[in-house]
Length: 64
Image (cartoon, rainbow, N blue to C red):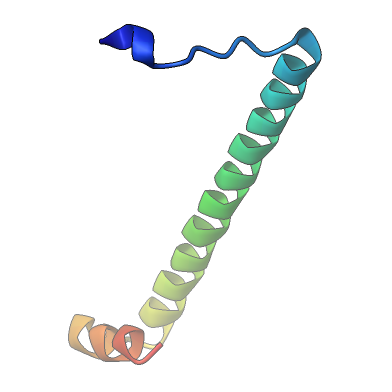
């Protein structure tokens, strides 16, 4: 049944472009993840500085 699925072999140029775009996407995803982690660290520090309880934190985060 596998012969029904076409297997496309990209040209060298398309393969290189696909590799470049994939690397770029992975880099952007990592930057986004780093940004989220940084934002969370900032939030946690602010909560700590203001003595925000877990209950208050849940209220704040649910309103965002």
